[in-house]
Amino acid sequence: MANPIASLSAPSVQVQVSEFSWKRAAETMMSVDRPAITLVLAGGRSRIEASYLGSRRRGLQQVGRVVFTPPDTPVFGRTRKPGRVRLVSCYYERSHSEGIIGGLIDLSRSHSQGCLSVPSTLLPALMTRLMAEVLSPSFISTALVESLGQAVLLECAHALLVEGHHRDRGRLTPRHFRIIDDYLRQLNHEAPSVAALATACGFSERYFAKLFREQTKQSIGHYLRVAQIAKAQSYLTETQLPLKEIAARLGFSAASNFSAAFRAVTGVTPGHFRQVNRPLAP
Image (cartoon, rainbow, N blue to C red):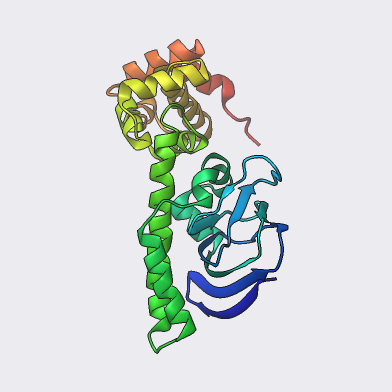
C-alpha cells in the first residue's frame, strides 16, 4: 500500500511524495480522479508493467520514469518480483489540464503508450526538484511548486502531443476534428481556409485534404461550404441582419456570391429560405 510522506499545494497543482513496497509478485487496478503526472523512482530490481483501459493481459508495457495518468481511466499494474518505489506525483484540476493537453479521454486512448512512459529527459529533473522542495519546504515553496508544476504540465503536453503527432500522421484523430470545429465556430468576416486548417492540424494542405476525403468520404472544400451555409441558415432564421451583412460575416466578397453559394447547397435563395423559415409571431 502506498505510504504518503509529504505534500504541498499551490493554486493549480498539488505535489505529493509517497512510497510503495511489495514483498511478492502482485497485481493491482487503480484510477485517479484528477490528471496526474508521476515520477517513478524504482529501487532494487523493481519492474512494473501496466496498461490502460482495464486491459489486464493485453498491451502490457514496462512503466517508464514518468507516467501521465488521465482521470477515471483504469490502470492495470503488475510486478513479478519484490520491490519498492518512490512516487512524486503532480495532480491538476481537469479544466486546467485540458486547456493545455486537450481532451483527456481521447488522449488516453490514442496516446496510451506514450502516457505510460512520457518521452522527456527534462521531466525527471523538474520533478526531482519538486520532490526536494516538498520534503524540505521553504518560505518560497508555494511559488516554486506553482511555477515548476506548470513547467511539468507544459513539458508533458509537449512530449505527448509531439510524439502523438508522429504516430498519428497517417490519419485524422478526434483532436484534429475538434480543431476543425473550433476554427469554424470562431471564424468571423473571413472565408474558411483549407490551408489554415491544414497548418493548425500539422499537415500540408494536400495531405490534409487527402486524409479528410479518405476518412469522411467527402472533400474538405465541400465540408467547409456546408458548414458556411449552416451558419448562414442560423443568421437567416435567428437574426434580422441584411443579406449583405450576413455575406460579410461569412467571408463572401459580395451578397451575390453568397446567394449563389447558398442556392448551390440548399436549392433555394437566402431570401426564400428566410421567408419560409421565419419564426411565427407570438
